[in-house]
Image (tube, one colour):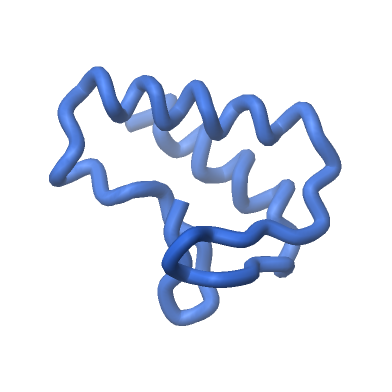
Length: 65
């Protein structure tokens, strides 16, 4: 996950192969098991604008792509 302009995004799939994309989705799904209040990304910093909802959107968006 990355943060740009205060918004949470999935990793850049244009530079990832299919295996890495599947692994990233699997990792994101694990977050859905928890009540996440704050998320800190390596390069983007903190994200606390309803991370549970945004993670779910990222996972479901990946499954529908």
